[in-house]
Length: 151
Image 1 (spheres, rainbow, N blue to C red):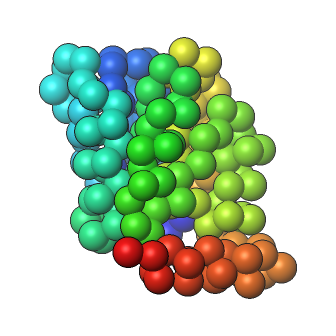
Image 2: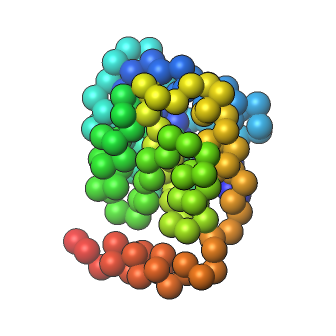
């Protein structure tokens, strides 16, 4: 993934979220933190997800990582923001596919399931994709067009 500004947020202090911040920094990314990763206390998963998604939507971050207990809540909330394609990925191949075939711009993970080791695998797989699969271009463009046309 080409963008170097990443927003990372979580609704609680999950090891995978803290790991993501440090790992991305070690790889040279500028990391913006929101939610529990920033405050050190439990936060609303809805508010964290929307805050991070709006940052990506406005271009303040190139992409994002969100973590909540299952990862489902933050992915649902983030996908309410125009221009966001958040994907729940608790394994490396799902993360890779989300970038390759869906042009996802937010990675959602489960704080319950994803260990630091698995988080590294997921993030590395996500970062390994620099371009979408051209056979999916029409599908991705159709989705983007629909998103831009809705109120």
